[in-house]
Length: 375
Image 1 (cartoon, rainbow, N blue to C red):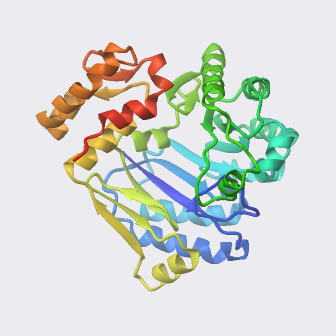
Image 2 (cartoon, rainbow, N blue to C red):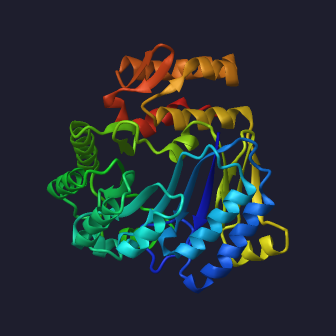
């Protein structure tokens, strides 16, 4: 099975923390849909496996009209085997999800919504330059449920400047009260290319300290586990059987095709990514000369990527798979560098599966770094 990711780079305004490729040139959407459809045609032979998941991310995919989305799905159906598709996700901003638009989405193959809420406190939303209010976010979820969407995920961010533990507790409880199926929760990261980083370096805002960050994360895990959510990946929680199938494919070494500027693709032995420029992307596809870069994955790179993606998941890393896929050298290596963490009860091995303990989750970045093979 394989997945398809379509990058929709358009935004009405930029959030100050986001470093994903995006553009404010929303008057280019129509020509972009034509170009994206052409790329889907040009690359129809990239994936040899039946498609299981489709994901429209951004940017803001919910800026696309029903007609524009219909054109994309028509081209997907024309050039790819979609008979095995189980999950089709659309990322959406709360203020785009009007009843009329939601009813149109229900006519399309979309069966999962990922709504970018980030916070249920207006003062934090304003600081992040989000377009919606907390009330609009709540209403968007209810409206989505009212028209029949029963697989809804929301994004939340914690560790915001001046955020209190009580505010984060309220955010988590509000998310639980919405009776949704999936929550992705991320600690705020100060990416160097963002306005948020400039505010940090100029001293206008301060990062939360490490102790409070751990308290935020601990509260998140305890509250969501208590509400029946499974913590299946460090930043992702789902009700039983509602894990994100598409995102799980990234962590399971499943092949995927990414179309659109900056989109990545993976076929098992190499990774490639399109140029991060709307103008150059459109020009390249139009001239049958797609602009992209390729990285061929040697054994060490494949091992390191497997460690990073598997240790992040509750399923853990399969030691038998490591020995078979990468060789005895890498198998012995991971056992050697996992041993101190096993003794410290931050990693454990059960039935040849190496996984984080609850204590290990809180220092997972350091653990994964120790397990990587350094030449």
